[in-house]
Image 1 (cartoon, rainbow, N blue to C red):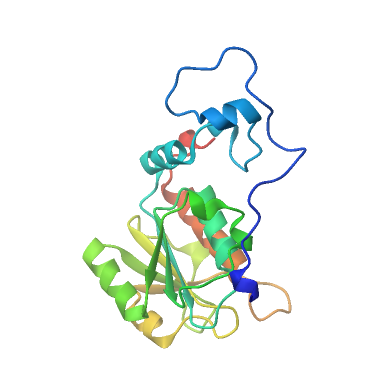
Image 2 (cartoon, helix red, strand yellow; image 1 turned 180 degrees about the horizontal axis):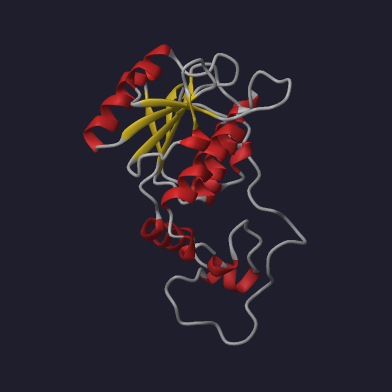
Length: 216
């Protein structure tokens, strides 16, 4: 069994969450009867305590933004789980994984159960999807000629694409993108971790386009 085959953590574990529902059980179809009886130790916001997974997903579907993110996975990138977890926190519409289907889910911390995921065999498939969906593709990579993300307004209907750790975004993705943006750096490292860069870029979109009054 390889590291990518090992399932990630299922819940936070003992000492976290809430115990069994106190008092009479609520008559609400969103609640999971088993969780009401035994308690809820899942990594979910308080508003979703005791809800079934299906009810949580349905509610998030009503809150999702028009932002999509994609990460190229031609070398089995270990950052995908963290990207999925951050995308879930920002209610991203869909996380697109290009290349290898198998990836290490530990970093997702179970959020892949609540986040829409879609696989594309090739970057060309991803770009075709974006064109049909009317999404503007923005590559995020620190390369010569890139615009600073701090200075641009990202498209509202946007697909942010990130390359894998090391080689970065493929030439095909760069050529198919409407624009390429970089993140300002001031230290000695040549690049920011791909999952961190994805979080910065997603939050930039959130600051520019999201209704912050709907945040938890």
